[in-house]
Amino acid sequence: MNVGILGAGPFGLALAARLARHRVDVRVTTRDVAKAAERARGYPALAEVPELITDMATVLGESDLLVLALPYPVALRLSQRFPAFAAGRSLVDVTNPLLLRDRGDPFAAGDGCLGIARALPYTRIAKAFNTFTAARMDTDASDVAPYATDDDSVADTIEDLARRIGLRPVRIGPLAYASHLESAALVHQLTSGALS
Ligand SMILES: NC(=O)c1ccc[n+]([C@@H]2O[C@H](COP(=O)([O-])OP(=O)(O)OC[C@H]3O[C@@H](n4cnc5c(N)ncnc54)[C@H](OP(=O)(O)O)[C@@H]3O)[C@@H](O)[C@H]2O)c1
Image (cartoon, rainbow, N blue to C red):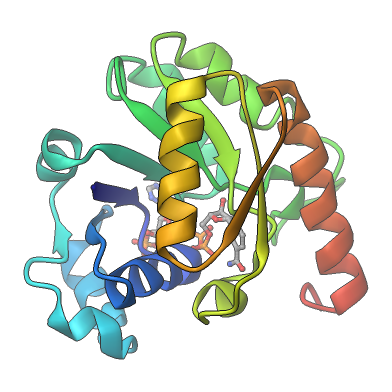
């Protein structure tokens, strides 16, 4: 399986590092490839991945599974402006729209994953992995990985991928349940002090 991650922030790179440690093929793309490559040097597992950070066209062309690891408003705007970018593809949304660091009202984030799904009617979408912090994702702990989707084929892909990287996937329900995962991440962050 080839995984293509859109976004080279702490979460995108932590996920890439975990995938690399478990020998899953991974590529990452973002707007500033040079800056991202520099940041990736902080992850020993990524040093062994040739051409890890690459352009969007390569990631879109070569990945079986796309991961949206951009700030939620950026991911939503991308989906609304370029609805064809993931047409016919499987995509995992890891965004946490309630957790914007510069948020005013955390509940003003709109429809979260469902907003992205509405913008991408021809994409098989799952909400997954958003309940992990980047630091936790960059471990090999065998945590439960709850996910939500309407699509059985993307569910199979998530099950396979999660197990390959040492997680225990649990399908909690349809994509409408993505909002529960987004709320769970907010509660976790608020109670763990990760936002302070
Ligand atoms: N960090 C966590 O613990 C965590 C946990 C679970 C889920 N998430 C979710 O995962 C997603 C990624 O989070 P993150 O922590 O990795 O960092 P992030 O700051 O949300 O995203 C970083 C990536 O987004 C790019 N980006 C930022 N603003 C952009 C813009 N206006 N246009 C195009 N690209 C832009 C950055 O590019 P540059 O490098 O060029 O700025 C970088 O590649 C978020 O939705 C977050 O809610 C994060």
